[in-house]
Length: 237
Image 1 (cartoon, rainbow, N blue to C red):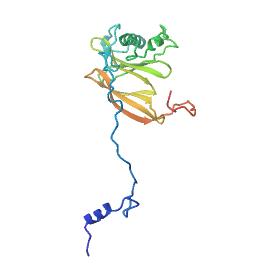
Image 2: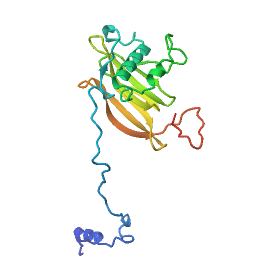
Image 3: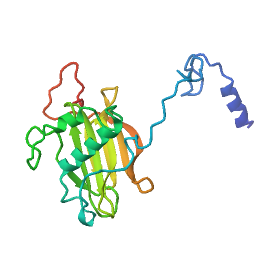
Image 4: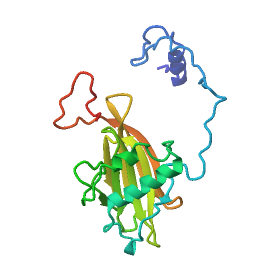
């Protein structure tokens, strides 16, 4: 019996017209896919000025004016004292430009009293201790709420000489903050109400700071006990 070579059959299929369905199941025309255009660069002659030395928010920085801690432990450290010293120094350094800290942060800190937790009106969140550097010692994680939506997230560690160092600063709408092993993930609303942006930070021993490792999108999680209005995202604060 005469057999038609497979290469002839394949040639016949590929030569079939692209309009309508082909004889082979699953091969169909997708119509006119349009013209492929190269990306168009907007404002290509405009570039931002480079940051001045020490003007990058994510850069590790020693917090001035704090006593040295013993045994590199952050357990006995008052989070409010650390945040107050850090924000005061950052505001003085950036001259109120908001590059390092929100200009309203100092005013917000004035609401804190001398109470252990800063009092009922204090916008500094309760501290969380978690080992993010993998050295067996816990870092201090906290945040300063600015206006009910925007917050200043801060992470601190202690060096061998006892100095307290800020290893992460992030101004964000904190939809959620999660820690797991040596990862810290920040969840923020995106422009699409169905998704949140998730920034995953990990310890970088070369820079001595928490660096962004991955940025992804995740499904929006509805907040419990929060009825939604027609114009409200289910995960927006």
